[in-house]
Image (tube, rainbow, N blue to C red; front, side, top):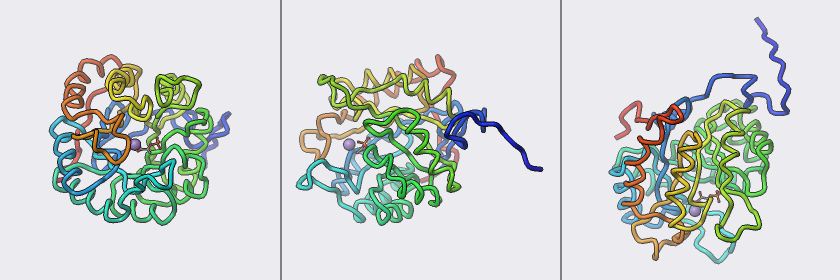
Length: 287
Ligand code: PEP
Ligand code: MN
């Protein structure tokens, strides 16, 4: 039987009218959304096998659930470190297997998307590509969940319309990410818009996580804003971690130390019951 659902928003599939209950997205067996709070942590960039393994072991021991690491980096300058490319994905995959964590990495274009989908458990689409509509359509045809970050000048409606592109091609496994927007403020790299989390959750069934690393750009602000993200009711966090931030090849200024992440992980169980959430677990052994 055909069912007709009246939808009053321009986004249809992502709206709560189309699906009132929260979506739960499985990332390599780790549940995100519907009460399951997931912590994604790792370096901004995969730099080499030792660096990646050192950080991965630290974030795993801290209790994080999903390992991140960029192999294709969208850098403002063409002369900055651009990421290791495919060898970076191979390192991340190997390390993810070794520590027993699902992995997420950013795709910049069609070619890297194919490689990220092949090597990783989740495809990240970064802020700069949030409105790359052809890339979003490719994500919609990929067989891996997508982490879609809010563009730095995108409204909540534009973020939801971007997600709609992915769902409209048949991929319903999308997790949104608030990572800060451009404002006149200069005490932070971006302005972390936590009200967007509340707005999205009213309008959409998709999980939304908070990235206080890009959202502040400064190490000492990351953990307090991570706690704020948990308190506001986000479905998870994405945090950049480095054991030697002074030597990081990208985003060292916003990388927290492993012990800072470990402390946050101890604090989260105090905050999460306030919003009816709990730390997620791996549903299946990934090791
Ligand atoms: C990242 O996660 O390393 C990144 C580049 O994020 P954003 O697209 O939010 O700037
Ligand atoms: Mn980064």
